[in-house]
Length: 306
Image (cartoon, rainbow, N blue to C red; front, side):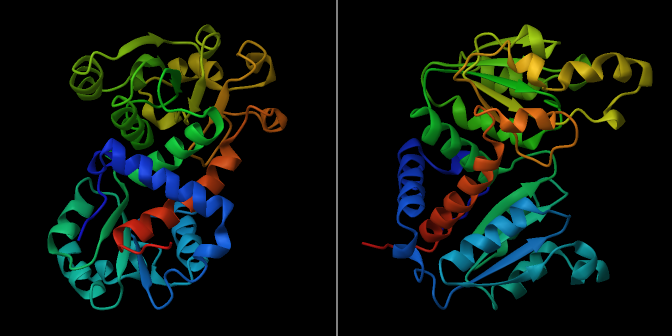
């Protein structure tokens, strides 16, 4: 039995096989429509989510399976003080596989250590978000045709953004990857990622404070939210906030084949005028998330469709 707690739980070969399976699901959905008939997915979401929870549920229903679970800690026995360890032991009696989101870093790891069914980390605090990373990788590979030799701009909250941290950890294993880190000083990439991941793996990177200064040579622009509450000084936030809003004017500075990704939800960091630009693929990204989660469920349940 295997779990998925981090993108690094999958080798490069396993990751390629998973993405190949997700691509086959995309093109041949009927072939997989009853692959999980009689199986149940439990979604254990201790904090609110729209895309991730519904994407998992959609994935399991598309495979012919069933779904049960809760969408907030208040609607579970966690409100009575039940531990994650006890909850997962109970859920293991009801379901065949589970997806867990939790505000505390490491909670899915604790669950996996006590579980008798596969556990998928659907996001733990500011730590990891591996299925979003799989979604990002499938989007890039499907639309760019490769996961190597890419220059990737990461923009916004690089300090607390778990999607950014997971994506960096996954991409550094591929050849020719370069990063442009675009953020205010208050939200720079943490040292443990910069030093222990980028520099340790000899990955080329530069840092920029303004989005328009970084667009010219990007293959991918990965946008995230810059949140006012992350700043100690409101004047500094007001001075910088417009630097991280992607609009048509800034898109005019970018290469014609650059792709814009975003883990969503979007607030105001991407102007709605950008939605009509063919380079904006964040809604396609959502659809790829369903395919990749279908592939992951099949893989962890050891279900093979000839």
